[in-house]
Length: 506
Image (cartoon, rainbow, N blue to C red):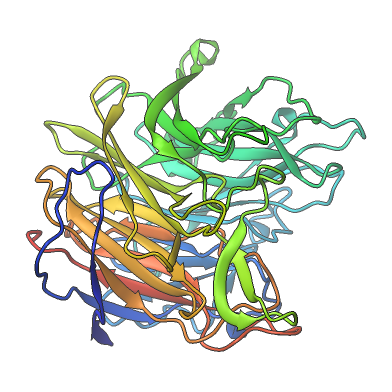
């Protein structure tokens, strides 16, 4: 169905780059139901909703199944969501029979192919593989559709803890670049409450994988080289750049990753002024010449969303209307301890632009943990530098969290996210503006939730916003919501997929 936005709010920018408009027309949004827990045999509380728009379909992942939807009719392609493990088991692919989460969907716009990937789940002391499937065509309904499947052993890059167990490869994120598919994942210590102790970045042999040929060994770097398991890693959850549009990066262009720089662990420090920019130079001819370099980008000061000096990994502060047994509002996860996917890259010919966002605290620490959205644009043909940034904070009570950012072909940017408060059920919203024109901007409603998650704190983990590769204008967004309260032993989450086009893009 097509629904106009119910509300519009001015967007406030900390740096004063933008002004509040006196009037804005309502943004029209088309939404339809994505994968719901009721469609899965064994739904998980953790949803990990993400997806991508291709030339003919939208493909969504939730734990642990995929469903495709026709872009024109919005009808599901398959009668029910498909278990992702069958992509690899049908090909007898080693190590990929058990997958319990952390999947990711890409549409490789430069090759017009689908990519689905996830790590397996062998148990605490097992062998980990990263499982990748690449479609032979852009059309998921084609009779000639085949999947080229690969599994990459991760253990050589995981290190082991003091108990001899491999570190857990958490929160893997994948990006398309001209010379490789680039992967990043966190290293968590399973014997120390899954504390983050490091990160790994890898390059996968895209050229051969697209041709169903034998892939060369993936090339990886670990930071730090030998992760200590006694201290918390503060620059975790790297996000690789992912090409938006069909114009590739210039030949020889390095790939880039971004990650948070969490505050120094101290009872008196709650803020940071930095993000990490990682430069991955891949040389497939002489892999030993490849490099992975960390750079610091100074940004306006921020406190990560829901930050706690005593427990930085506990980011559960977003209130819902539903009450706990003690009368307080139940709180869900802002996932504010990291930057959020995607790192969307677009080559405009005359300039190269990278955009991304995170959840930060916008309320007063001692009285109000309210969260908002901090966004960034990096620009430059060499090492990208901070060009613009701002903060989305509309009021003093609504929490905005879990953003995903993308940019259309004329420089309009949008950020899709969830919002919630003591009086608003977790819902979907977005904000947009034109970056090069520094135009006026607004928030608009995408889809209102009508229920709360009352039996768990983990919510979503991330969302996904991508731009149609055919028209270069239409944004497609997916996120979690609840149609009714999830309480007791119920698992009844929903996902909603939305599309919208911004003014000036034809």
